[in-house]
Image 1 (cartoon, rainbow, N blue to C red):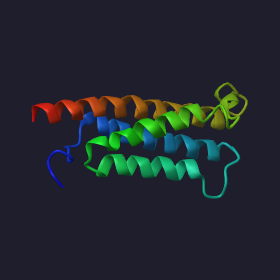
Image 2: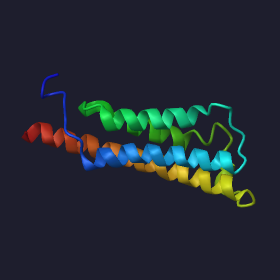
Image 3: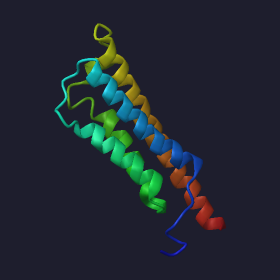
Length: 126
């Protein structure tokens, strides 16, 4: 792999990967709170896989995955019909878990974008 495609881990990229872990924790909290999830929750697998890929794969453009997954978790609430969980305090575990998942998704998307910018700058200077 040439130096043009390999990058060092940036703080922003680490936070983007961590955002996916936070989103996964939110999903676990939702499940513990009684939300209806399949036996193998795809969102949990996606969040952990994207977090691991963003953390371990040293390609500059890999942070795009953090952006896409973060947007997927936030925007996906609306077509899936689960956006109402953001205000349903009667089911506290589901409510908290949904907000934790959204926070993780937003952090992943925002810091994924920052990582892209940092890594582009380091390519230009380094």
